[in-house]
Length: 281
Ligand code: C2E
Ligand code: MG
Ligand code: MG
Ligand code: MG
Image (cartoon, rainbow, N blue to C red):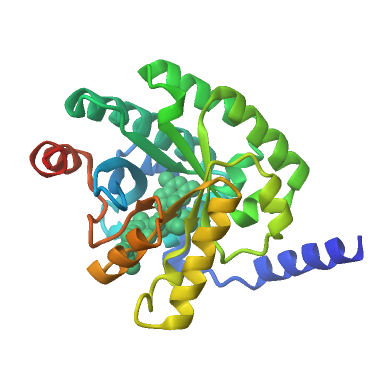
């Protein structure tokens, strides 16, 4: 109990401390109208099987093209959207758009491709998230197994009982769940072992010095082994070099995602590259 009290005090303290420049406050105001102004757009970053290099799916990444300031980084506006609660309507739009696009890929590829959608912790306490997922799947007739929801370690851990209940209900729907930014949170391994999740996504910070640094390489190898023994899939994020990809393939990592293989691109460009590059070979 004492530990919890300390934590919530820290949280309040941080909020009051946070600096809000006039420009930032204006951005927050503008975010309220970003959806209706059609300034939000989903980009998609391809994911490949490490060993075969076959395209397996994509992660949906939100972009805000602000009418006067141009592209605003998700690192800047997602926290704003979380704090204001706007992440709930925005997140539903993301979910729906992602399902819509994933179905169009399937038609072109002639085989199923999955789509991964990031869920903010604020969305996980939204009671309607499960029905929002169900409705988006139904509206676009996307098989549940092709949708993967990415949650962070911290959001799964903040309220373990609630998160557990939500994850169980999502599992009942048949959607996949992965732990994003795996390894940088504070979750205990025994807790992660018991979560009904299908994949871990290794945070890209772990890959930076792979394979030339022996210590970093051993750590990634250990994470791959951990995922294997817990019987969850493993996605490596932030793959930027051929040497990293070769290392991951050799260590039998499942899926790779990163600038080497493809940057996040708008939906039309994703479709074009799907047709012209990724289906060949
Ligand atoms: P994330 O979910 O961990 O997404 C991966 C981030 O790494 C993306 O940044 C992606 O562009 C970037 N990335 C991918 N490959 C590489 C690489 O090889 N090198 C480097 N340096 N970076 C790479 P992005 O798109 O700026 O998104 C940042 C974060 O914003 C995401 O991290 C995610 O937490 C959040 N985010 C993005 N879209 C959404 C969304 O629709 N909903 C929510 N709740 N959060 C989102
Ligand atoms: Mg993600
Ligand atoms: Mg990540
Ligand atoms: Mg993240």
